[in-house]
Structures are given as C-alpha cells and as structure tokens.
Length: 278
Figure: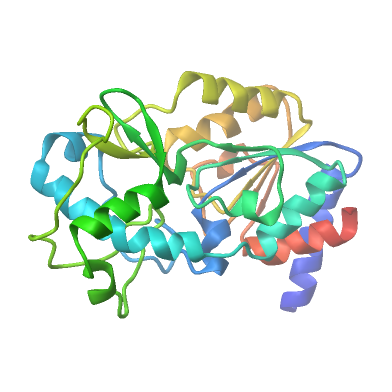
C-alpha cells in the first residue's frame, strides 16, 4: 500500500468513528514538532531530563542555570508559529466537530492557530508566577528585567541553539547570570508551568474532564501518554465507553485503550480530517 493509500485508509477509519459525533482533543508535544519545537519522547528525539519542581525550588545554582537558559529559549518559543495540525483543529472547532482542546504543551500554538476553547493543562511559557505572593506577570516583562540585569547575554549565545518543549535552551556558560525576584514581595519567581513533581491545579483538571464528558469521542494527537496528566483522560474516556482515537508517531502508553491507533504525523492526518469534515 502506498503512503497516500495508507493515509486515506487511516482517515477513513477515523471518519467512521467521528462522523456525526462531537470530539474532545488531547494534544502533546508531537503536534508542535512541525513548528520547530522538538518533542520529549518521539522516535528520533534525544534523551531529555526535564526539570523537576524540587530541583527548581531547592537548588539556587540549578535555578540560575534554568533562568539563563530560559532567557534565551522563551524567545524562540514566542516566535514559533502554528502549523497545519493546529490550524486543522481550529477549523474543526469552527465547524462544530471539536468541542475543545486539552493540551499538554506550553507553547500557546493552539491559541495562535485560532482555537477558542483551549485548556493549557500545564500552563504556558508566557506568564511568570511568584511562589510567595502568587502575583502573575508576563514573560515579556520579566525578559526586560533580566535583560537589564544581564545586558547582551541573550544575543551572545543564540547561534545554533536547541530549544526544548518547555522553552529551555541549551546554554553551557550560565555562571555569571543574574536572577531577579518578584517586584511586589521579593519572592521566588517561577514560570507558570507545571513541572514534573508538581500537580496540575484541581480546577483545571476538573474543567478538562468536563470537556471530555461533553464529547462523544476523544482524539489524542502527538502524545506518548507517558505521564498520567494526559493518560488519565484517555482512561476516563475508555472507561465511560467513548471511542478513543490515538494519532502519534510511535507507540503510546494508551494504545491498548484505543479504538483506532494511527501511527502518523499529526499535521497530515488532522488536515485530511478537517478537509473531510469542515
């Protein structure tokens, strides 16, 4: 079977489940790779060691290294543009096929693509929270303060850098980087992102469950479903009798729960789906 025939067969399988039904969508890092943002666990991804909450709050040197790398990396993420997969989901939402998107990504690309109902399960790169007083500020505002404290740092280390899915850039020399604290209370600042070892806010999780329960099908796209924060929604949908469609390059932890599993890129499959349904 040719690649075109295989894709058509995959689309037909998905259409058989989706036709006349409303979908909830769960996305992971794999949907953003076509926007130049690498994933964590794709077939060709190098080994990664994402930062934990305990490392960030418990080790000043680690925190300094993180902010130095993020000071460079967040700009790359901010400049990223939505790809065909993001745009296809926005089209499907406008057509009434998709009720909303739960994303494990922090890149805001679903919002940039025009999706209106997006649950940013793990937060976003674009905000910073004070761990003492809970004050929220924009990442751009913090960038201006960090640039004032470290003039020219970002420009000096931008050549050929790789940026991880959490906006962390690979920068080796960070020893001289100066951090800044909350302007309101002097507390520790942290990106408004849920790190490993940290819980997703309960209200956000409840909202995501409501979105799944309001739909008749769950589509998981671009996630290995390795961590429970995403897998729980697949388990919930399957337990409640809702069909589960998984689209991912490579196997996932939820494959045994899927009604249909498609080992393919998100952009191609979702675009073909949107062309058929919107």
